[in-house]
Image 1 (tube, rainbow, N blue to C red):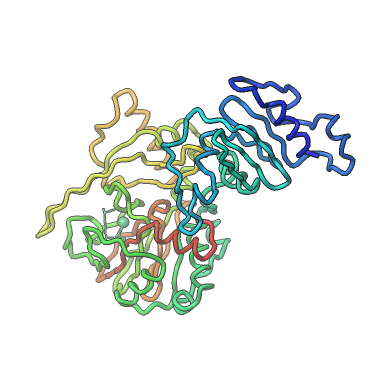
Image 2: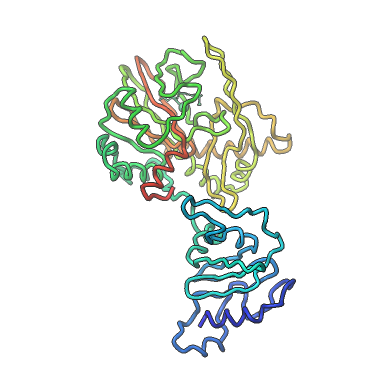
Length: 421
Ligand SMILES: C[N+](C)(C)CCCC[C@H](N)C(=O)O
Ligand SMILES: O=C(O)CCC(=O)C(=O)O
Ligand SMILES: [Fe+2]
């Protein structure tokens, strides 16, 4: 029934080029109720058609199920999955997009129960599965989040009783790895237990899920409070919550910590969900959130200790969101490493400080603080794009090892196991 109705429209539409605006008032913005006549002509049809469409000057408006899509004609030509336009073996586009006339319009449009058919002026036919369009259209994408997450404060995290994964199951079974990654994606932190407390064993863990990201700190690093590097991390001092490598253009995606030894007091690790704090700012004062997401600033690492000479600069806002759905994907927060602010005009800078204060207040709320004591055998993976870490001051000998991971490769592993990442 829907099909017949649309086909009729297709006939009507021929020769209607150059039209603007809505030509068929019975097809309201949300393609509202179905017109009475066509429904009656097909008694077995369901009450509302699954699909309805209408051509506009530069796009096709298509409703399928509850999704109303607006599909640009060039987009529709560009994403053609025919054998000559797309190589299904490599999943790569063969079509040269630059060869598409930017004023292209389909010559004929037809929809059946499952598929949209478009015939282009040169006779080429493009087919789209309607389900595929829902999944891949802007409107479909907007209805979902890229990364499903559970935002937490200390209470929520404890209540969830997220299990640690055993080292053997992590290394030897896909289920163990998948469970670990699922927890990591949802909470931004995850633990592996019963790890042999050596750098080499920690490295094996890291390599199970990703490629190790070598940085100025090396590939796998050890650190103690020997000030072997010009950074507070290499002392016994407390470290307030922060994310690492904010001074890289692309901050490291994941950080692995494994405490190999601690003979002394203090030294607990602090973890805070930066996205939870940012969400609270968004709820309470959206203008602060917006400023933190819009104003770029620099972070900097200037080192000149012993033989180590480094000067790194990373530029970007504190909060990074996908523009199409405002979903957070990266927080860059390190008050130690924040550089001189010289990218913000005078009439914005004070407002930025207010916004930064609001976020800091959220990040410092005691209910948001998760304190854990890292012990030999228990490795911690932290999403450095989301969860802030810090540490309590300590006494005695304390040795940590770990590494950074490339984010893309962690997500790759997760996707290959069937997780949404
Ligand atoms: C982890 N490791 C000890 C190797 C490096 C520490 C880097 C510390 C730096 N201030 C930052 O926050 O990025
Ligand atoms: O010593 C710690 O527990 C963490 C120090 C730190 O922030 C880091 O190494 O990135
Ligand atoms: Fe750190």
